[in-house]
Length: 458
Ligand SMILES: *Cc1c(COP(=O)(O)O)cnc(C)c1O
Image (cartoon, rainbow, N blue to C red; front, side, top):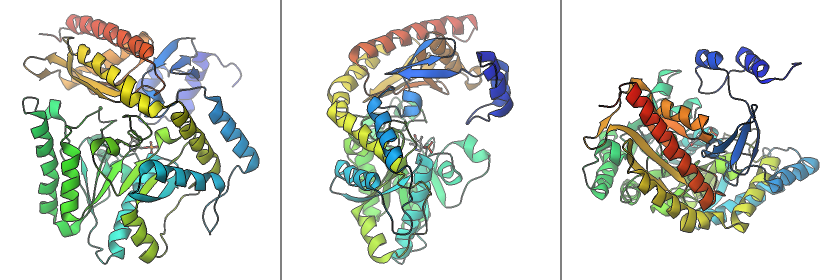
């Protein structure tokens, strides 16, 4: 690599770098956008363009870019103890402190934390842990895990199997004993039904599935409090309390995948705290370090921890980087920032409601259906005819058209099919939310003109 100009890097990129979730032929034709630096809620590319990152990277940069305290925490820990494992009866101070701190944030219901380096690994851990729990209690046949269509629980074989993404299941296959129910997507599935009534009906699909599988074979139900990668699907408020009731009724373990909703995204430390659920296990990753270093894990409820510790013997599971001291030190510094700057409360009391108000106004746009937000995550679907609830033909790729306008105008907004979603850093101010909204309006107008030109509007 001698000459590091952009086209050179793009050529080397397509020659050697296999990207995640990418169509490489398409990418090679266009060339990847090279991101070179970042500060607060903005990123810059190699052409000098400044872009408002309304996706917090991949839902993770909760405290924003350029936070020196996180850099210092990593540097200090690297100089003291850059690595040691937690196998063979050893431990390290940052991991211990972080476990204690997370249990405090999670509440009385929880006692322990298991660490990994990602959300996917954490959900693999969950599968093994719930099955080991039931086997320890003499019910090894309780193996089935119920998940939901359009859920995202990671990309390892087990994580992808838990998820409800058909495209992922189609490549590489799935592991057995995982079944799916329909997602609680009110606007997409039953826009004319009363929202709360739909929430109860969507939760009842869990009970139907439990009875179909046999309650004595079901180990756990897993769900994201708000589905993220599926397109920011915010369930009706009746949904989670009813899911909890059904899990309790059949003694089934509840796993909340908090990888996106955790660490302030919805205005509480964990999404389930807002939703009225008390999961036995909570998956975390992403926002725990604001993405500065890879870290994930599972917060473990007392019900499970007690059984595993008292009767479970050795848990034959773990990762080289479980409890990595540098990642844990960064997580502690990240939590310090969230607390000192009151970011979680600010999302709950101020910026979350402000974004909700702005999203309600967005609904006036002729393309926008089902615009809603919770905390600092928000979505809407591009509609061909809102009044008649007619979607665009999937093949038309209108989400990608809209996303293209966003990129061109200096805004990162993600397209999930025709759903357009954002999850900006929690440090975003009201003025920055205004800036985002102005860009969103502009991009919607430009998208509408394109769609009219393409003859896609009636
Ligand atoms: C991103 C994500 C994961 C996977 O996390 P990785 O760190 O990419 O393995 C799991 N669950 C949810 C809800 C996620 O958003």
